[in-house]
Length: 151
Image 1: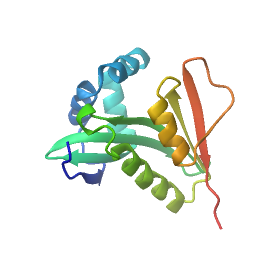
Image 2: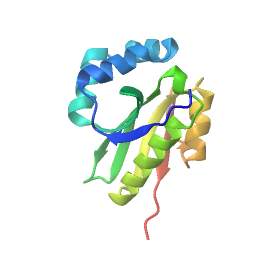
Image 3: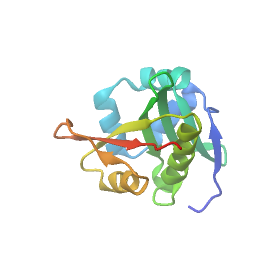
């Protein structure tokens, strides 16, 4: 699907976040459900996370949610999800590029995330954007971090 995407910040309602999660790949959805209550997670992201969203024809095609602690100078990417019809089209990369530019502009010193070890496309994406593995991950999840250098 080569529909033009509209990148926005914090436009989706909690209900639209929930609809997005339910429309995602079944493996992603199962992994997310194993870790959290979907309605609670959608509400929490809506209320507390900075969200970078990719919209196509009124549909939330991609979502990147990040929490940041400006006092500590760090951020944590809680979610990166793209609907199957929009995968492998650079949607996640566009949202990540926008998020990282925002983090740099805010003067943050680092941003971290966790990813399933078997999600090689996502791991490759994060490597391309400068993330490196961190010690201390478990058998199923890999922790990664990008440290910013400020002049």
